[in-house]
Image 1 (cartoon, rainbow, N blue to C red):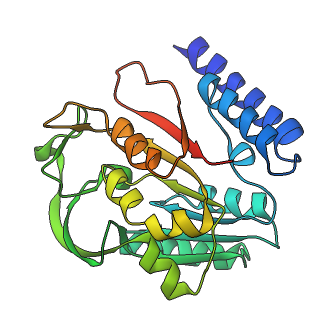
Image 2 (spheres, one colour):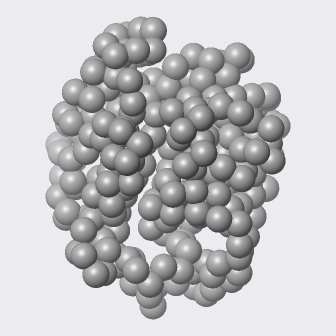
Amino acid sequence: MKKIRKSKGTLVLLRDAFDILFVYWLPQGKLKNFLRKYLMKQVGLSFYGLANKGDTILQGGCFMIETVAKWSDVVGDSGKVVIVEIDKKNVELLHYDIKRRNLNNVTIINSGVSDRSCEKELSVSESSHLSMLKNDQISSKIIKEDSFLGKKIVKVDSIDNILIKLGINKIDLACFTVSGAEREAVKGMERTIIKSVPRIWIRCSFYDKVSGNHTSEDVKNILNKHKYTTVFGKLNKNNIARNIFSYKN
C-alpha cells in the first residue's frame, strides 16, 4: 500500500512539474488546450495546467485554504479568485486565513451553487466535502443517508447571478466540487458560458437514479449544446468519481 501511495505521489509531482514547465507558460490557445486534453486523459490537470496567469477563476465548493492559496498564486496579482462555499463555518475560516496570508486577489461568497436563487435543504456531514444539497434524482455509492449528522436550510444561487452581483463580467475558468449539484451548477451559468466561454473543470461522483448515467455524462450533454469539447478523466477504481474538463477553442 505504501508503495502504491508513493508511486501515485511521484506521478502527481511529475504531472505538476510538467504543467508548470510546459503548459502554464504557453499563451492561451488551441495548442494549450490540446495539451490539456491529452494530459486530462492520462494523469489529470494540476492548478498550473488549468489556469493562466491573470485569469479570473471561480471555484464552486471549497473548504481548504491550501486550494485557495494555490489558485491565488497561479493567477498572480493581475488575476482574481472567487470562492463560492456553502458552509458558513468554512467561509469564516477561509476569511481568517486569506487575511492572515494577505491573499488580496481572493473573494469569498457564502452560498450554495444551483441553477437559480432559492433555499434548499443541506444534509450535513462530519466531513465538509461529503455534505450535499438534497437531490432525489441522484444516488451515491459512498454517501449513505444515515451517515449525515443533520439537515439545515441554506441559500443557493446560480453562477450567473453571483457574478452579476459581484460586477464581474467575465471569467476564464470555472471549477466545481459541489457534491451532486454539478448539473445544476452548469445550468445556472448559461449566460456566463455564452458571454465568457470559460474553461470548465468539474469533479463528478454521482449517478442519475432514472437513467443510470454518471453525472459527468449529463454535464457533457449540457455543454455539448454550447459546442464545448469535453474530456473525461479516468474513473477511480470503484467507478465512483472522475474529473471532467471542458473547453471551446
